[in-house]
Image (cartoon, rainbow, N blue to C red; front, side, top):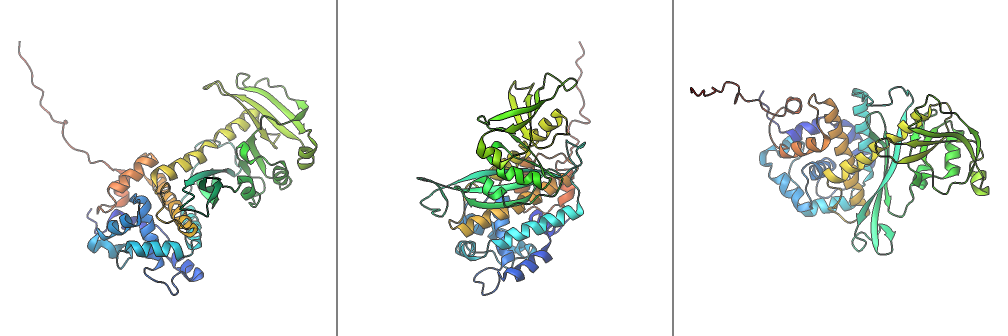
Length: 391
């Protein structure tokens, strides 16, 4: 089927542009604007990520190369490199943050994401982590981290159903993860999974008091007293080494978390490594506790995809505002691409999907026809005549 618009244009039609227009009015981001409007700015930054542009020059030249097709993107003219630099420094980054959540709401309202594992657990599960984004301190002087090093930090909470971020924020590298976590509210009865870098007994006690369950790993120096040691018959003794109710014994820790905790020690039969988990749920089987924590790797994969496949390692602007805009537009890009991955009949690896979309970004082919069947079938080899040798 012939189509008159390219893949990039078709990607943009999947986004709720009415919501974007409402947010532009809310933030007054086009008021007294110089250069390009907010939509052109957004299209430019989305092209930066999907087209893997590494500079404002690449963004400008890449969009100029579309020639007559630029109007199909809702853009009157391709921006100059100086204009992209100016709007990245001066347009409020919160427009793009709010648009990310509008896109998330739009996608989840029209598409449900099935769980790959843990289907027996009906509760909402959230995976929480943070990732360092190395920055040059001499250029990004706002990004305090270490004496001679700069860094930003991306904090995220993924909904396990679909593994899409339902919360994210960007801080300097010195901001500790738990300081961000303390400001978050999770639904009653939900499960939060985090690594031991988040361990703060007062915060964990607050989660427990709000009837939010958590699963994490213990710190090596945790001092505790065993209240009850559960027998593990029938619980795969090769995997579950310990299952105990404990209480903390150091005075400061005891004041912060006066209640019971559950400790589960697990042996990974594949690697031979032992892991010790901590939770406030005493009804799950010990194996379930271990299985929940193992799903935390999804958020590590999320950070890996963002860093390796989108323009997030090198930034096209040095101000905090420009970095925020680039990260939030990257979040919108990964949200859109993961949605396409789930919708496609073809079993795409996300990295391969991003690469193939990048190669075909300005090709005029039907998006979903191509997603479902990306490779043309040929008749070569089907009717080949085989030579026979008569001896």
